[in-house]
Structures are given as structure tokens and as C-alpha cells.
Length: 68
Image (cartoon, rainbow, N blue to C red; front, side, top):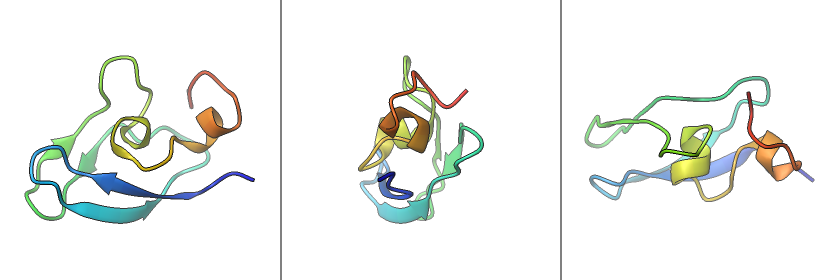
């Protein structure tokens, strides 16, 4: 079963936020609610959830290379 909610952790301030992942698109940017740093995927990752989330994005969970 695919998990659609993940906890994103900001690498700058450590703030955590539970967010629902999109199932039809990659999320390339995320604005940290605490420090307003704009998160972008790390090199080699397809989205912010794969880089900073507690679980990877739905396509990666389902065995795809990325969400694109």
C-alpha cells in the first residue's frame, strides 16, 4: 500500500511538517513553514519528498525510477 503522507524535515532549521504527497506530479519545491528556506531535491532525487521526507514519493514507493 502506498503511503501518501510524509514528514518533511528542513535541513536548515530542523522543523518538521506532515504533508500529503502529490500522486500525479513531482514536487520540486517546498517552502519551510518555520524558516522559509525553499527546499529543492538533492542531486539524484526526483522530488523534495525523496530528499527530505520520512518516506519517498508514491512512484518510487511503487518501484518506479522517479515521479517524472
